[in-house]
Image (cartoon, rainbow, N blue to C red):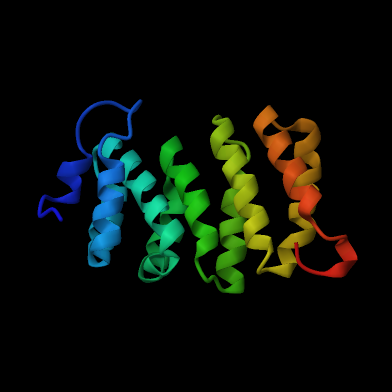
Length: 179
């Protein structure tokens, strides 16, 4: 498809545009071995490249979540370190797609809970969704996540309130198992 570097495809323009991110998505879906190259872009010195790489990696992983597996440790580390808003919200979408151990799930949930205090409503909303998604495979998180969802229906941003209501509506009663 393209022999150009993924970094070169993601460069240029400003943060109001996803640039050629969708082209990168098609490229990586056609040549999955290039996913590692895309993931490396999440650590680029260029904030635009990081943002677009996060967008493309999230879109690719929505179709082929297994591509995330070899990068689990790196992504969990980046979840903690990330400060860029766009990186945070895309990581919040990707992390629940990973198969996590109980300790990894707990650490991810702790970080995502910190994201609920982010200045960005988008980050907070995706963190709330990610916590709910993580709790589906980690029963230990369910009571805390349910409480956070209930609190968000009252104290969250408009987007958080709507998302929390939607998630809560789909939940089973507490005594009857998984979220």
